[in-house]
Image (tube, each protein chain N blue to C red):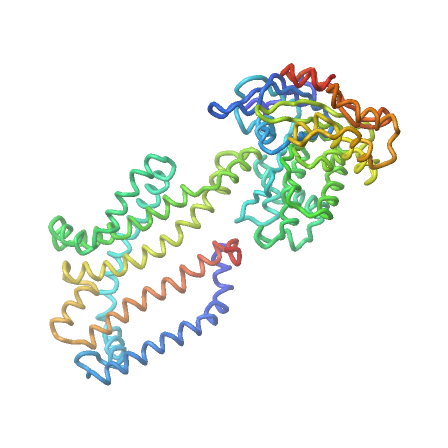
Length: 263
Length: 313
């Protein structure tokens, strides 16, 4: 509740501070328009026609079911990796042996391209939702796992000693000493993983499913409809940016207020 | 842990007897013994690495006792570390109230007490809402002191908490600490390697020597801390610095013959000068004039024979 109020109170100032970001986005649009002027609309449609197509898709009602399907898959995979990654990462961080053993495994996981997982997933799950969900899970899991692992490994011994000297009970040890520290590592990892999920799900859909934004992209590609392609890309990126900068970033600022200036 | 369970039968004192401790094969402490009754301020003085911090942690129950006994008869014990060690994600007020929260006090009550003590220790009301990184080092130390004192401890353990502060700030915190100590007859065991700090604050100075850490001497200061002025502190610090045992413990070369007389700051009696000049040869503690408020006491509880004999003459 307190968090919600702080979020609402901080929003106007936060949005105002976004002018710089908006200016640089507009510069990107200008570059986009320049490219379309030089190479013609088949290679690159101008921003107005791309956004026009997007508006048409939204007004005709064609956009929402696809976006909803994509969001559902991305969020399922993301939620799975969030729970499993946080839990296992914390657990592994508690033991020196477990963290030493899991680090190379996670590095392998991170180094394996998502497209390789996608091929395996298509063999295992076929054209069901399982394929994109699994691919998202595998791509997002190591990011969160590493965050949780580092959060537990870097716990401050001095603070632990202090907490012992002041006879903090176990529950307080967790809520007042461990948790805030771990969250400061976990939260950025969660945000990074969200971006990864959103990107990977579109790729998985492109190759493996009949609906969703990825599938719609595949259709527009086969029709050589670059305006629709750009429209879908704009929709996906716009949604991600909205979630990240309107919801997660303000929460992060509030949760990590104690870090401001300091480092 | 042995330090945390007081019973009615035990006297209100901290008793350490025959305490030895080793980290692996490194012997850190050997045969430590002393007694700290309620209302007394004792300073553990010694060079870096002589096991002072280990001893304090054993007394606080932060380390497990390997050999010997630590018996803490005080009801509540508070600890103040060398660094402030504040929780960076909590405001100064919540940091002060940490021990109270651990004791299960309701939020409003612990905040009230934390605010009271914070203001007493010279924190401004708006400082209490700040996070530690927004506070200066001195303010952080005040918060750390407040966090310990808000528990109304009977025994306060201090691990060189003032060593990084400037002179003015030190003086102020000394005064605040002594006020609290006197008002509540609190026992205080403090570590310092600053002899002047020890002479200013303590009723007894326990001198430690390294490798392995042991108590080689006990000095008692007869004048109450509140009545000591700067001149008194300088004079007795200088006296302490001329003592052969102190010089030896800190690895300083023995005084040259006659140097004791020359170094006597306040017009010391000629007898004291002669004594200082003579004693290094006989192994007697030097530079302690008979009129001084600083009394050298042998420590019967400290085991190693060589240090005891050197100390007692």
